[in-house]
Image (cartoon, rainbow, N blue to C red; front, side, top):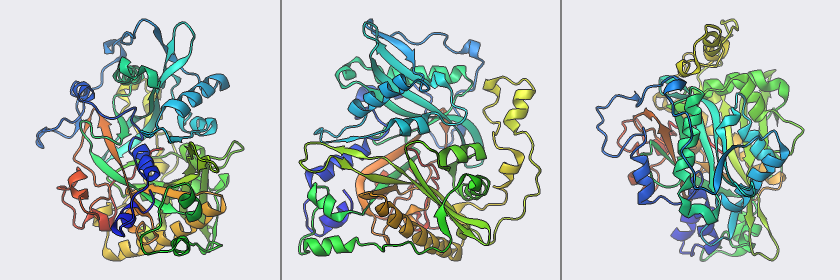
Amino acid sequence: MAGGDERRAAGAPETASMKNLARLLSMLGAEDRATPAEHKFWKTQPVTQPGDSEALPQGVIQPNVPPEQVRAAPLPLPADFAWATVDLDDEVQLREVYDLLTHHYVEDDDATMRFKYSPAFLRWVLRHPGFDKSWHVGVRVKSSGKLVAFIAGIPQELRVRTQSLQVTEINFLCVHKRLRSKRLAPVLIQEVTRRCNMSGIFQAIYTAGQVIPTPMSCTRYYHRTLDAAKLLDIGFSAVPRGMSREDHIARFALPTTTRTEGLREMQAADVPAVGRLLRRYLARFDMAPRFTDAEVRHMFAPTNEERVTWCYVVERDGRITDFVSYYSLPSSVLNHDTHDTLSAAYLFYYATEAAFDAPPAPRDTPDAPSPYERAVAAGDAPWQRTECSRLSPAEAADERGVAPWHTESAAQKSALKTRLQELISDVLVLAQQHGFDVVNCLSGMDNALFASDLKFGPGDGFLRFYLFNWRVAPIAGGLGGRAGEDDLDPAHDTPHPHPPSQWGSGNGVVMV
């Protein structure tokens, strides 16, 4: 799939395996392809609907309510099934989720590719700081206890333009392939919604490859070949017409060592500095998460478990000036004589001082309890804390005075582009050294500033972002640089002083 449009422009046919990978990626975040029945379901939910007037107020669609006004019992299931809360602290139950996702979560139409989420990966994602066990929802067969469906909610503080709120990130919606006709997916969504509402959370963010009511941002997958010979051997790429195999492989050659002075692996002691840099960098976007230092430690600091993320910093004169990370999500390659795994690295969060005209000013805000902690101490109920930030005053001060991404000067964008190209070039070298075959990314964040120059090829997969119970004007996802993309971009008519494809994006959310 890497470089798919480039190959087609050169006249080379896209391989069947490439198309399977494209379908696999385009299905991320979705149990199955959209159907009229699914659209009928979404028309009953508090989401932006097609044709909604632009005059409708931005923000909450249905107000929060106390738990006594939330449905007390889940919707009924077919007679042979029962609801369950999956305890991921129990290794047996964690393995059940792993087995269900391995065989039934996301698979291409021809059953030749399948994502391989490891137990360590699931533990890392689903046991996010502040996680609620009740948001790990399962369906079991009554007679055997077998887990046959799952959906998860992950806590997140999300800023949408000037408004911040506590939300649930919905992920890993999965139903056993033999039970797809039971229409369990809408019931799973309603049950995790009910449980989140009982916990005082009434907004959510989720992604899907398909179009359902109504995407507020759209991003495209990009792929950078690392092991060109392997991808040719297993049919995931093809040599362009008029080019030899050797020349094709040589096109993707990388240096043997990194070039950025001061680049090193992130350590636990770097968490405060990385947290401060990342909060400042993400404050530039129209939509982005707000990470506490505790979340930065969980997501990026190394552990003794099976490795999931690779995280690096650049240190200059005792100061962290840059941060970059990626995570591992391999795919099984089925029915191949030699290779059984495609090792893929996915670009994750990054940040650099190059986005700013000057380094941050010294902190002048003493640390103190966060607004959320103060609300708890004051006795406010969970459903009254939606807009209370979990960032401490000192952490929130890191975002102070940051200008929006689309107001940055041409000189700032040029400096940012140059620095990101340097950093991501080194990421490619490091990922190759660690045995990855390809590096994937979306067109969100500032990825459009470096993707083409670093030989990331545009793929056929798109990932759309949705907000539940929150109406917002569309947010640019970095589309617009290729034919036909404008028609796919919900933010196409959103005014910006520069084309999003050249200026970056307003979407600072990266979901696994």
